[in-house]
Image 1 (cartoon, helix red, strand yellow):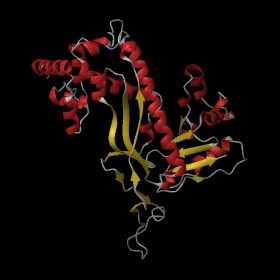
Image 2 (cartoon, helix red, strand yellow):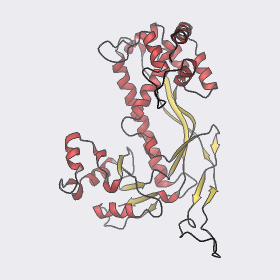
Image 3 (cartoon, helix red, strand yellow):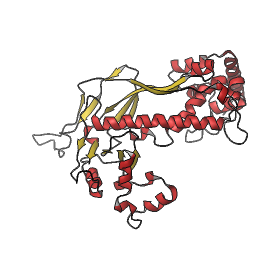
Image 4 (cartoon, rainbow, N blue to C red):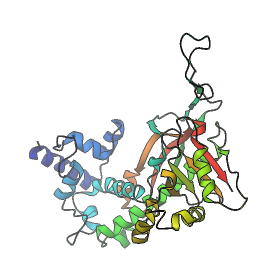
Length: 356
């Protein structure tokens, strides 16, 4: 049950920290390996429903309300309410939340990952599964050959963490009187840009390997410079054993080629055509039960088939976060939103290339 006394006490601290430009709560969150929102939940727990989901406003949203900050609707306040009111130290977390929302808005890169794990080491030693033996028919204990062996092995090289991000230069003088929904739209666009950056990174590693793993195997056997429906079928059927194509990644022009293949434009043969005509959502197409993913900057004619359940792992040293101190002390003039992570291939055979 929500404790109003606890909420009010936390609001008083946030107001005091905002007046003094004190980033102590952000430091406390980092030391506890929590996000700012997670720390507020720890300090002021929200009521949850029987499924464990927060019911109503979470701790951060309650503090926005108490600071008089309205983020949407006709009564939305201006950005100046953050800066001159009692909620200044809430601004970096608000920016992070909106950028994260934009990150997930168009194509969430995490959908393509088999696993995401934390690790604050400067380098990681990737492991992978050697499946040559594992793909053999199962054995019987009484037979001399015994059971097929699945091996987990280290790659030959380490992979270094990389700090990726974007810098924004938002003049407070320009934004101070703008309503928060307008500011949110710009932040969400930045988040979508960051997601595009990560999609390209994931695509590149699936295509070329992670520096320790081999490049994807090219299975194209069709007519050069032509991508036919039979080539998509062949790409899907090139996955064997327990792997299965779940996604098709490529440049927008290559995804357009797929969308214009005859089986996908014939409404009697492809029921998703009607939905596409109504919504314009190309992701409603699932050729051979595989989701289409446009990757800005991908290499033309190099289409990747992916089994997202097994192929690639993300190791995260620092999640997507903004420079809180700069935002609080410099009123948005310049700050960086960044994430420190690296990707590695877990099972080589869970991705295939069709280079037409």
